[in-house]
Length: 316
Image (cartoon, rainbow, N blue to C red; front, side):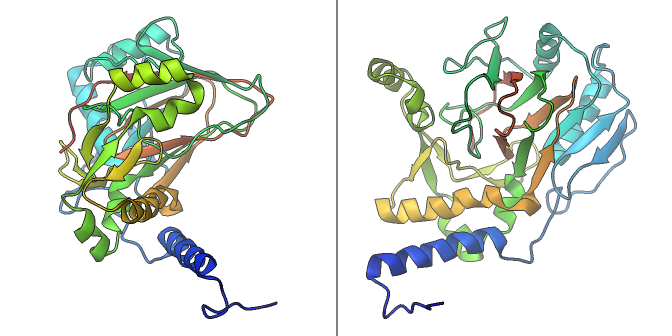
């Protein structure tokens, strides 16, 4: 095996090797501080249902709730507390309708529509139907609709058709991702602002005319690179590869390099939870604190999901 040194490696290759090592360090370097709750917060028991954590920092199943039945304000408050603590909560054996899915989501706020995604039986239902065509580029780690001035607060997802294998969804805790950034990186990004643009995430689906139309309707917006969660006060990393295009005030090469490093944080397994779907399962996630990834490993089987998103606030 030949070992290359910096002196014998062409400059571009040496730079690529250094950047690759930087990305790899972002993924595997440890040890890490893993906190589910913001620093100083205390865990409290749940009285309305049983909570079964699925990961160290993110994800839990809620048992003992029938979502077909009316949800009292007390039960809603307990579910909301679990959502803030675990960032994504799951319910099994919940044969609810699309109408009921919307009714539940409305308990958390006004519903959002998305003009780029196929609709279900209602404009507030985003429908994802995959599997009939050969597998293709499916997804990347992302936070939903950060191209809006007020990105979604959260979303409720149910699968209409579950493939016999595959089709899991993964979520990453971006509060944990921020906690474990090197201090020098935190110093660079605290107070920094990034541009988010709808076009990079959807350009491959749009023709030229549509592209121009959407650029006029949805111009780029600016959000903090580090967002403060409006309810928990926790700092979370708020950039994603689908929609974040640059950090304002930085030279393009510097911005690109730093963003690549920040994007990689969602890939750290210690920050993730992976959910295996079954018939009548429901996921409810906090879009302000997470990124997610739908795994496309089920072809030629079909996977059909319907999502209802809840309008959020402007990040600060």
